[in-house]
Length: 399
Image (cartoon, rainbow, N blue to C red; front, side, top):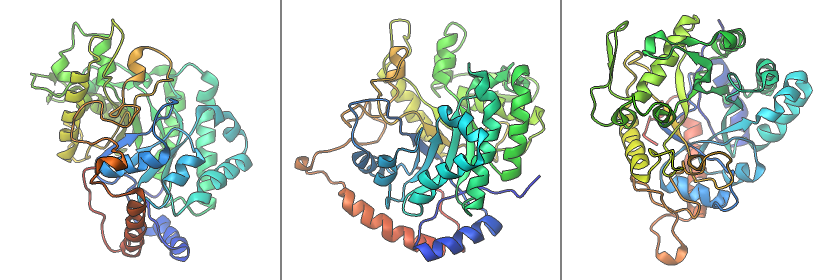
């Protein structure tokens, strides 16, 4: 086992940044995820707001933790100087190339990470998305090599104390997930998962899980209480092995992941939810995909995360989750529900009210700060934060 780290993002003047990075990689326990609430900023659409407008939207909503699925330079430039903490993605289509060449991995990190630090708070790189358990077996074999080569590049550039390396898994990697304590990794996944877990354990990375009570409920609506999926009042389920009771499905899904990790020998690895959400509209056979259900789920999820508590099986591991997604994305393939997970509509207005506000035009007398003022505050605040980060623990605020 190597040194354990947790992670965060710092921004500062260039000279201090070099010193801070070196100190962070050697001595500091740091956090990439501020608070408990984050969001996925997907862009498979041709009608959503510009990246600059998205920055204004997220800052007004006080959502600081953001994940994207690529490393688009327009987005990285828009996030520069904002203080928002960004996890970028290495798309699945790059895995084979990065696995086969350390040089290409180094070039990718230089062009898409190093070139934008420290002004853009790039806290992490997600290597692929839902690779294991997916349909392309060649990618299964390439995932570990790509992960190691990207990490080697990050480390050689002295960014390993600032930029975290992860990959997100779907629930397709699990077997026997009910009750939660019975969950294990699928037999055909284990040979790929265990070396990956060993490497993540060495570098201090968490297990990232895409967990959707919506999809679980849709797969078996006759036998699952929708209130259990929506965090509403219900008798829940009882796990006879652990004598634990679950009053909501998301906690059960997370503890199933913890059980699988424990079975594989990784009792101390943290689980972070990298995607969860509820569709507000669907096809005729997607009756649960309604605006009211989406509102209930996301409102109750905010309350759940605001409690800053763990799950029944891991009560000391505070639950952290990225919501899927920022916008409805009109170009996503698949059923109608796939295009309607956004907390916001394509025009920037809210899909339903859970306490956020949509974009407002300048003529409407918006009370929000302009993007320029936000950025000015972000630069000043980040400089102060960088100079005090080594002695002050960052406050964990709900985002």
